[in-house]
Image 1 (tube, one colour):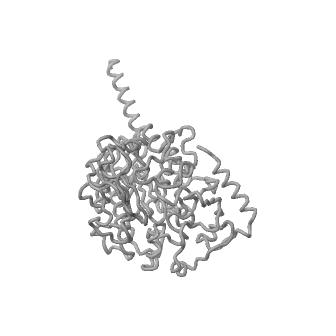
Image 2: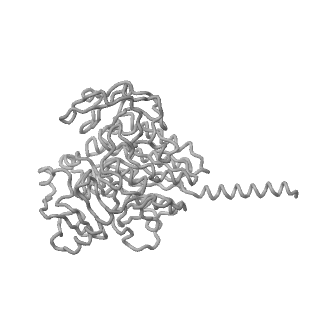
Image 3: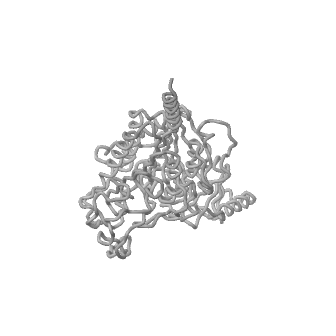
Amino acid sequence: MSLKILFSLLIGLLITSCSKVENNLPNIVIIYADDMGYGDLNCQNPNSKIPTPNLDKLASEGMRFTDAHSSSGICSPSRFALLTGTYHWRRQHGIVGAFGKPFFKDSDITLPQVLKTNGYTTACIGKWHLGWDWEFKNAPSGKVMQWGKMREVYLPNDIDWSKPVGGGPLARGFDYYFGDGTINFPPYAWVENDQFIEVPTEAMNLDKIGFETKEGHWEFRPGPKVKDWNPYDVLPTLTKKTVEWINKQNQEQPYFLYFALPSPHAPIIPNDEFDGKSQAGGYGDFMVQTDWVVGQVLKALKQGGMEDNTIVIFSADNGPEAYAWERAEKYGHFSMGNFRGLKRDVWEGGHHVPFMVKWPGQVKANSISNEVISQVDIMGTLASITGIELPENAAPDSYDITPIIRGTAYESPLREATIHNTYESIWGIRKGDWLYINDSTGGHRKLPASFKELTGYTHFDTKGLLFNMIEDGEQRINLYDKYPKKIEELDKLLQEYRKKEY
């Protein structure tokens, strides 16, 4: 055999070997629901009025966490935390407003960035809501009366649509983006990568949307939109684009897909074919459609032969919106499950979210973990699984929960503590069985009298709150006066966490 032939064979073996190593890296798909309550899933609420067969199946094929938490009780902060492994309050507490600046510092290291650097193709499809660097021609030229006050708003001619929109997903490590930004925020238009597919030429008329919701209000903010924009097209279009993107992937190239759903967030707009599919009104039907969308993604993975080498993570950004109070009274469906509070609250229902992981052959099917985890743990965990060494100061609040999902030995509780927070005024800290809240309430809104009567909730008058979450997950028995040393310990630890800067 000639040296030339031998050299060619050795090169071929090396290429084949490298391909096998690369091919062993799992694909990663995160499906992130919007304003979905823990009790909306049939598999974790025996009294649910909503069928969720695809999510139930996903749970049965992997591990379901019963004590998982988002960083915040609202949208943008939780998304930032998931993508950076950093508590949101280290940057800001509030959401990114319409035409708001990026939530990120340019020094922030994101999950898609580290995966892309290590050979992954990365894509974000759906809701972004983490800000862009907009090119404004001038200050807002429009004025609209909304929520009892006159608001200045950008109109189509105030923005330079010809330039790429920076600061968005492509600037944070994603190779590809498709979405409408945020379904109830302007501009109401499709963005692909960093360009608008069609330029908005009209302003959203809040009095004449042209369609009706199936429940609640539109929740739209005023601003530019493309002609004939139809909100009912958003979820179906995103689903189609996601399936198409998955079908285009090469099985030899690992990929990361972050599919951020706009549902079941308001506006509650299930497509007509889902009407009446639940016993929980329009929201319940929207949940049925959301479940169907998850099923379409799982089906695409299976049909493409990618199911066995793909980690699928499903969760939600925070608890259900305030419509859940009326839904519980009217239909007997409790979106928050047995937890107290809703979206925005530091009460458990504001941030205690669905969370499940499927990874065939690696995560035991039909397994359940009661360990306290946070969505900030996703980045550290995926870095560990893929063998990526994170840069210094990356994912500073993220714990590696790989031992939990693989079913190997670990010391519980795995997290030293977990911080619960939405706005700057109220903070909670969970350590082991104990939860301390530094206020007399964990709520940011007054509980309706009718819901209070329905549930038997009472108000507390102590300076702070203390609950044993194992014995009292519904947060009904305040132990603040009984354990002053525990209060002192947890308050001190909370302050130590808050003082850390990254």
